Amino acid sequence: MKKRTKIMSILLLVTVCGFAACSGTTATQEQQAQEPEAEQWVTYRGGEGPGKGKKIVLISGDEEYRSEEALPMLAQILAERYGFTCTVLFSVDSLTGEIDANESSNIPGLANLESADLMVIFTRFRELPPDQMGYIDAYLKAGKPVIGLRTATHAFHYAKNPNDPYAKYDFQSTVPGWEQGFGKIVLGETWVSHHGDHGKEGTRGLNNEAAADNPILNGVADIWVPTDVYTVGSLEGADVLVYGQSTSGMTADAPINKDKEALPVAWTRMYQLEGGKEGKAFTTTMGASVDLVNEDLRRLLVNACFWAVGQPVPEKADVAFVSPYQPTMFGFDSFKKGKSPADYK
View 1 (tube, rainbow, N blue to C red):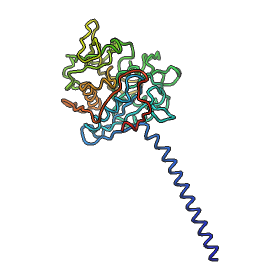
View 2 (cartoon, rainbow, N blue to C red; view 1 turned 180 degrees about the vertical axis):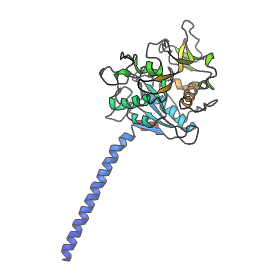
View 3 (tube, rainbow, N blue to C red; view 1 turned 90 degrees about the horizontal axis):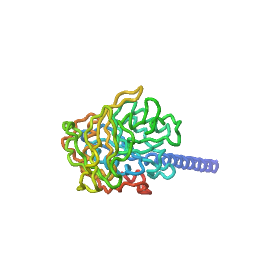
View 4 (cartoon, one colour; view 1 turned 90 degrees about the vertical axis):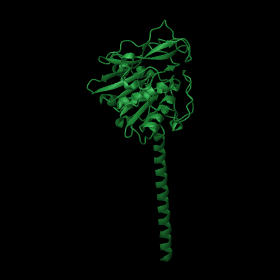
């Protein structure tokens, strides 16, 4: 009897241990399945400050101007210096989990927009699937504020799937009520052309005297960036804050090219999607990672974030870098290979 009891005890122990091992394996597998999701974007938690309790989602994804470098830097400033909680999203290779600026159809984490107070978008020719694009559409229909940088005027391009339900966002859209897509409908302008000589001329900012009292210009007086001026046509219902003068050279001391007119490079406007609420938008056609070496351009963007969420704009915002910032010069396929979102924590 004792022998039988001992055998039964051993069998029970083996069964329990086996179950525990299997449970441990299952838990590990579940954890591993969740970890890649969590590593596909990065969140900088805000602390004390005027932005406490506000959430900003910054969406990167362009082939040329290194948004994947610019937006984490900006998010760090907003979180560390002002208390905003900032989540940065990236174009990610779904197989490797690495950032791939050329991946046009995958930006994980857009569900974060459901609880966002502000969307900052810096994408170019993205063709996102409906299960991702739906979050952007819902955000905009809610009339929440938007900040668009540089290539956001041509943020989307549905070349492969012209019948996609969100193809109306395409920068060349001909859908009635959506002519010229997201750029025109929300930000005020789509992609037209380079006004400056790309790669040879920079941009000298010239504040609009008529907007001198606009708080977004607080502390903004000296903007020069190496990216060129974009062609911008009629801006319906917009308030121009800064004009861009083309400089005959790629240095801050390069002379103004007086043969070219100054065109808007920063403005605000209201937008409203059909069936949605009215919202406000700030747009700048500057914003490459190397542009943001300029202190006053960083200040312009931080000021715009305060304006967008309805907070008083600082008189002179502290926009000092939180961590070392060594941006990559703009150019196609110049993004740093092998980096994952976690590398920007």
